[in-house]
Length: 244
Image (cartoon, rainbow, N blue to C red):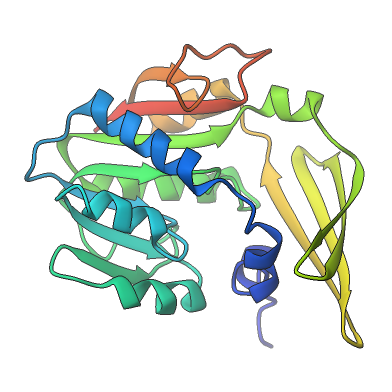
């Protein structure tokens, strides 16, 4: 019997995912990456892995700085589009982060914009972090950018409708089973669609435990894209910096 696809396999490979989120501020994201690079000061020879790179926009931005960059993502359609950007210092692979990385010996591994916590079990999260550890050079740096679970719970919007490119998306956010769940329902033409996003509400203490088990030394936590100190009650993000 064929195994049922996980929610992120269907949703991230759907063109409607990119329609719904087309409003996301690319300049803010690139500004964060620039600020992070200014803070980290990678040498010109640095090798960087963009883990869960999507269509490769930010991998390309990293490569434009002169670094050697590899981008990996589970979505074949996203990687097919990203491969149009392939170059001498920029390469892409379809990859499930729960599996061993296709390349290793990275100076930096980045996991941006809440691209973690999608799996059903903590064991799968730990597997991912263990592969991150194995993929880094000794002393290499891992940066994981996640939402702040406490802040997300305070800011839940419940039900809302967004209209993008003529499609009316009915969205509903709720907390269920230790996850923030967003249902996405819409009609396009004569066809009705339904998707879900399910992300585990991982806290700082969860990450501390997981990083230690994976052999990653957590050094710093930040609360926003300007790398201000993390505050559990007020910070919109939980950005973690660790060393192998």
